[in-house]
Image 1 (cartoon, one colour):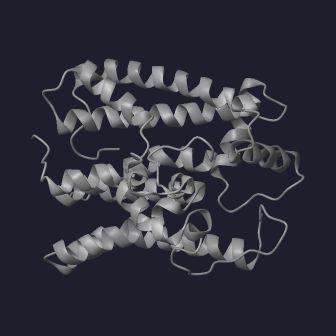
Image 2 (cartoon, helix red, strand yellow):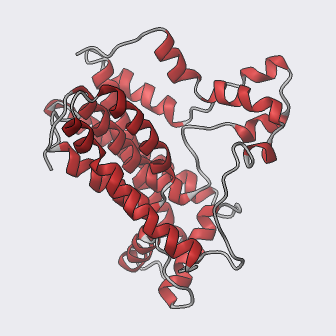
Length: 297
């Protein structure tokens, strides 16, 4: 699918693939080592086993469970799908590393491959700097942070390369609009939603705000809104199926959606520390914006 300039020069493809393969192997070892820890990874694997055995209905956001079951059949993982889960999640992290390596090359095209690899590896284990402890934050402050990587939620991990790809294409379309990118963005958004709609909830309002201020003609606004409209339709369908019809619900009790800013956040950390968590979670991009860095073209 043509989407504009390539993420890598041809000479960097081998290095990027080798780097992402190493990261995928490392990630597989990590996921395998925490297999006995009570995380959403294990819970989602158990759910996939039940779905494929016919003991549970397919949820509307079915894609991860479908791929996990298919991979289990391919590799002969007929038990609890632990091995299949580790493989699938390692592939997702490797794909994210591949994208990250390329983006670092765009930001600093003159950088050495080893420098980009080291930076991408550092980002793999990057968590918000605990600067809030200097002003008396409690230990629960960590729980309220927004880390760039997670290891405990399989659908979020699997969603990340899809979300990052959509983000990259959307930013490129902001820089240089192209009708060829819109279908690619739309496909990535829709696929991401049927994995987990979390990214769309951030993507849609942010993109709409940009389009509202940057679009000089109504046609630009309409064209740029196509992925949002498509994603909104799919999200609405999922909402009806999950929360009204309870189709394939992964929970025994009735579920729904409520609007309560910071309600969940305040459960895991003192409300007074939420501003600190926001600042430290986004310290890197905020620094980038404040200092006015610009990628070298």
